Length: 323
Image 1 (cartoon, rainbow, N blue to C red):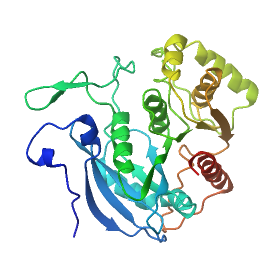
Image 2: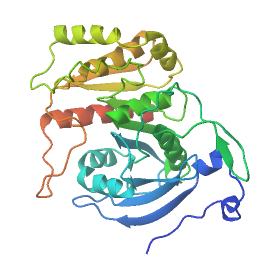
Image 3: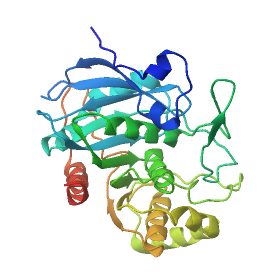
């Protein structure tokens, strides 16, 4: 039988809630075991800024804590609770490594990304309406993650001052967008961050074909040329204005064979040029999202040496700032 967390009284009687109160509201669903692990997963629904709910799959070490926590996000949003359940069971190896190292962990989900040419980092603001808030724009997917972080911080076994974020692909770009206005993350990893939008890349020439995935890694000379070409495609002034407020340690993980390696590298270089606390390491692997090890069809995990290295590097990074 599932249990429901108590919601604020104001919600029950139909009064308007502040943004902070909404972000701290949640519903606890069922807990279930994860195959091959001693750490079960508990599903929660988290109320987002505009009152809708987004799911997470939360796991913690034995004991009462409070524990540092690392939140995991991968790619575009959508698919809801079914996605969180799937990833909690089929991408559990990496999270188990963190659990064994003393971290609480959670798979996140959020609304789908959408292309909004108006995106300029404008703060989401609410004003009183006819019994409910009205907003100056629609909520973005990364703001669902901020609501999730604020909710997780209220849990008794979580140390609210030691929250880390590990985002892959678009999940990595969301770290940049959050860090540009939100100070609730202590340290973050952008793994293969697809952050061209955040870096203000101008619209691509529709006649230019998309570069294919490579079977061999970029050498340093070719990568430097690709990065220099990409610099000419971004609005540097806008990119640096977005980067300026960032004030947390960030680890950018690249992937040698990825056709977006120039984006990953430029993300790092612009942070470095802005004087931010940032580090870079790139890995030679054939899979996008290699840091999130996938369960085999027979139910086993067989992480290779590169995957083990990337996860160990990630834990070491968070140990430095969250412990």
